[in-house]
Image 1 (spheres, rainbow, N blue to C red):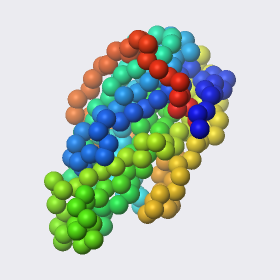
Image 2 (image 1 turned 90 degrees about the vertical axis):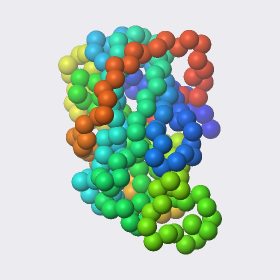
Image 3 (image 1 turned 90 degrees about the horizontal axis):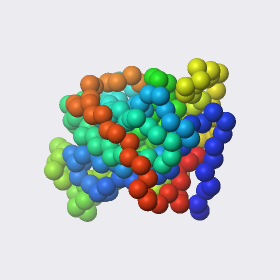
Amino acid sequence: MEQPPISPPNIQVNIRDISLDKNPARFDDDYNFTIKFEAMAPLAEDLDWRLIYVGSADTEEFDQELDSCQVGPVPAGVNAFEFSAPAPQRHLLPSTSNEDVLGVTVIILTASYREKEFVRVGYYVNTYYEDPAMQEEPPAEVVWDKLMRSVLIEKPKVTRFQNPWDSGVSNGAFEGQPTELQDVGGASGMNYMLDAAVPPPVTKAAQQTDTSAVGSNGMEVDSPMVA
């Protein structure tokens, strides 16, 4: 069911839609997002975006920052950009055993302004073998070129935070309520990872790209993804 845009006080940027190209995909394929957002007024500085892969439900030690980018200048109105990030690095996973690779984990897309996070979008990611026989009896060692991933892109969890933006005033409180992800088989107890403090960059982004925000150009935004 479509939800109307919600614009609490002091919210200057609303995410309208996030789409993911080629989903499901191979485990080692890049993540290619198209992100649409609306700026209520021109912003004096760029927006900072990061994509984080949660390697373990038990500790932040194995979180990986897959990539980051800056988007700007940001004019008022609907803007869109493409954000590509590489797959997680295998050697930074807790282990390469079936137990740690297969199953459900989380990716987190986070956006900040003036080094303060204002929105976090989390998705469940299921890693599995496409071959039914391998699903029934996984190989003793992970066969990476047979692994698939599926992002539950239709069921994001969006959490928004108050940000001073260009006013310099903030009380640090939450804005609105997060939209909860539906429970997914094997994902019980993982919701807390989407609410916990996002860690500092774990790995240096392979390539920092300044991506200029693009005007609406007639893009449809009738189904805003605003919590």
